[in-house]
Amino acid sequence: MSLADKLLELRGVSKHFHGGGIFKQGRRVQAINEVSLSLRAGECLGIVGESGSGKSTLGRIILGIEKPEHGQVFFQGINLYGQDRAAIRHVRRHLQAVFQDCFSSVNPRLTAGQSIAEPLRNFTRLDYRDEQRTVGELLELVGLEAEDAAKYPHQFSGGQLQRVCIARAISLRPKLIVLDEAVSSLDVLVQAQILDLLSDLRQELDMSYIFISHDLAAVAYLADRLAVMCSGEIVERLDCIDNIGCLTHPVSAALLAAVLPLEPRLDDR
Amino acid sequence: MTKQPLLAVEGLEIVIRRKDKLTPVVRQLSFTIEQGEIFGLVGESGCGKTLTCLSILNLLPSGIDKAAGNIRLNGTNLGELSREGWRRLRGDKVALIAQNPMSAFNAIRTIGDHFTETLLAHGKSDTRAARETAIAYLTRVGLPDAPLLLRQYPFELSGGMLQRVIIAIALAQKPDLIIADEPTTALDATSQVQILDLLAEVRREFGTSILLISHDLGVIARLADSVAVMFGGQIVEQATVAALFAQPLHPYTQALMNARRSIGLARRQRLPLSLARPATTIKTSLVTTGCGFAGRCPHVNGACRLLLPGQAENYAGSHWVHCRNVAGSQREAL
Image (cartoon, rainbow over all chains, first blue to last red):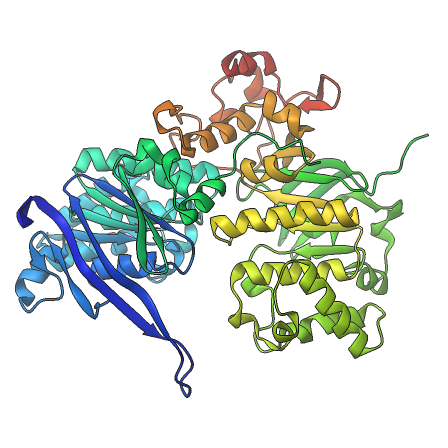
């Protein structure tokens, strides 16, 4: 497969942080160690791991906001940390994110409509009326109403605001969305709705996802392929999500065991 | 001989006062918890679960009041307690495990400070004895190197560790009841299982009753003995864990289970989420006529919209449900 077939490719990416405070030299933490992966257009890759395994850092590296020390990140064939600024800006619009905490990922002083319109203003030239129409369409696409554009973030519930964040992420019709724990803070019914929405949107708009989560059940619902992370490395890969029961690494086994079944355990009472 | 329950909540009503307007948020809530029982309260966000448990501790925020109802702990009516009485009760007889362990601690005081403060407030006079108790209980909840831990600050510990510390502090007073309000929601998947297992162990060893609040039926299935499902400020179904999971009767319970099953591992057997996907945005506020769930219920009929759901319908002994149309929803489930 040539570079052009791949939407995203990471080659030997590494990143470390220094622990400790302002005055003391802490120990070196290897957040990401020699990670390579690739993603074809239309695919959804799930990245799972316990907290501290480096999965969110990897997400930030993929988004182009955390420069790795070693290795390269190619998105649509462009090196995201390379020299060609114009080309990077050009592909950046196809790379969007939805984060866990929706309340802190929107500006509380902007209405939902203004938040959604921001990426549109950055990358396209729409007149006011077209912009309003697009915002209304986007809101309807994620299951809200066009009138919700005038509301401020505090007027939404968590699930509704996460929909606003999704609307903002899809406003430029991106090729890839990084979903970093995008459903983890929502309650079960809302989680199911958002996962369904993401699954529908992916088909409708022909997007790829990188779905980062600690919840294997949620990942299994959306992803085609799976990578399990532990201490900054990918310790297990799965090319077909249906074989999810066959995971063998101890970390994967722990994550599998953490999916609570709906059958009560009556034996140990 | 009738055994006296540990906690009895009868006809609890909670209202939000805003100027001269009263908005009911919890209506006619009754349940009992036996000695050594783990009682699960499940429902979506905003259904009144947390307010219910705050009212047991008389910790309702200002502007939200208990309008009616009795709460009895070991036969004592908590409504008659003085300020001093409440102080002795909280943390000693009834302990609270909050949802977010990171915000439950004072950031500039060490774990040891937190421990001794609680122990000294409840009668222990000696700091050294308090320290020894602290080490014993921290070790008991599975935290290594307790003496070091006592000198550490909350930010140095992970969420799972902090939640263990809270459980240790709660246990040190040997409370009769632990109220666990979404104890694992802020934790990652593997520490969630560990904390739940720890709570199960606590119950086995100390015989403590636990009021477990969660939005996740998986958590309830793992830990609880009996369950009440809350919707819009009311209990709509109550049963033992085995009965509820074997045969959920209320359409809302069924919706909750479908949501969980669909997120579950068997992707190819996905159930339609029509119930979990209302056409318009969800409103959980209370309605005064008809069943609160009517707007989202797939089996709704005319009577449901006009009349309040019938009195708790007795269905196979201890399993009861608040629904006019149980037969209809059951057909669907089978």
